Length: 228
Image (cartoon, rainbow, N blue to C red; front, side):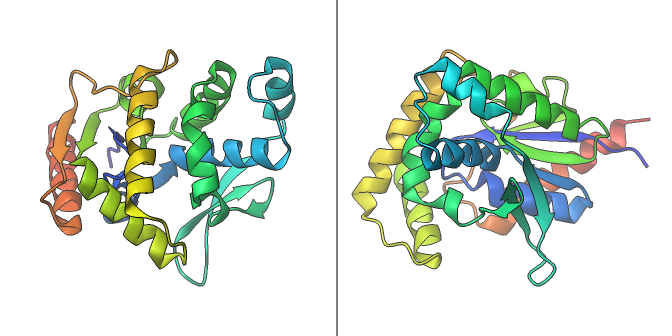
């Protein structure tokens, strides 16, 4: 059976990760959370007080990043492990969110993690989401999707997500965080957030979660139908 690489890019809070997970599950593909990889690197740097403006310090710690994904047998959900430690909850808090975009601009960090991501996608049959998946990581992906949504809608979604994890954050703080990340991600020198020319754009502002998942699955099936 033919398999493809599905690259999903877009702004923070568009539901990229949850959508990518659901798409992968429906297609029987492997989900690779590139955002979790950058968050894990950020967590590591914060926990070890790494000066991210010092190239030598950064490079010294890149070799210490062993990031893997494992399915929790109790929940069936994929979780992120950093050096054999489950960091799924830790990487989602605001402490990491406030620094992940800055860490993501570091060339050495991007090169190290992109190499890991490309290795994970060699066999195809993967769904990966992030900000440069269709433009840098998998420029030849058979299906590229670019997700977008209204800023306030994204902030409300992120607030709900944090509340479900027991974290209470003021909406205005989330809006500022997302706006700052949009600015940083879109204007960074290394692999800026941008829509690939051949990407299918999906505005999720007024879509239910199931609708955006089904839309991507439908397009993927159309692409698969054209592969001989």
